[in-house]
Image (cartoon, rainbow, N blue to C red; front, side, top):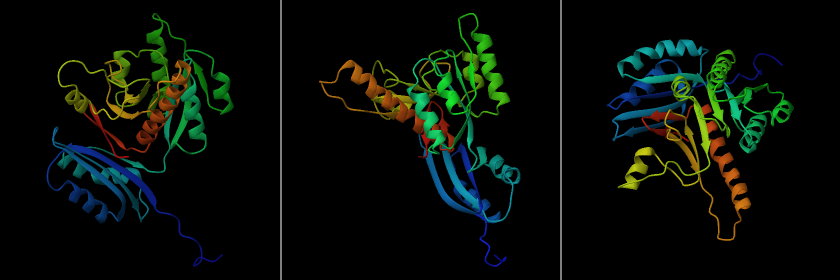
Length: 292
């Protein structure tokens, strides 16, 4: 094959995400920057929240000329500073490194392991951590390291310190609680803020008092069912990412409800992990903006 007939390599792809105070000219500034740096926008989504006065944007773009992500970050910094942006640029083809945590219910773990293997999730599972050993053989069948870290009231600080070590050593961006039945400390929640996703087997939260629908709007509730959310120091009160629902009839037995509930949990958690790994979720106070 000669040089003229050789196929050209595909252009590098990147994702820019940002949030900042809403004002005129943000989209123009971003698009002009990409044009001037020889980049082409493949997809762009944006949202201005009138309640908070914040603007959110996700741009998937390609770079026609060779360029590194570090150079893109350096050249975009001036625009980010001028608009008071909280922004990030990442390669679109990079798989996010994650840790899965599980206790004695393995349906979400099994689902995420399989989805990652077949390429349905853009993640690399760096390790699985558990306070029990029930799923060590399952995890081993995927050739993924399994870390048994027992937790008691007295050993919780040491167990969480070991988790933080693993996050650092394995260069992990996200921790997924795939039915990990331990309450994380306030310190750990703050240290990994926006980097821990949990699945809860119910509609969250339980609204009480006046104007429940107003409260639901303020928290970003989507559906009644299983809820995937970011973990905060307020137990099961973190920003909601996704909710799934399944209608059931009067003839459903408790065991059937459990089985249906497990399917619902798997679906909601898998979507939340996928969207986070694709940089589609931006925090908006106690809510999320999800560019799905």
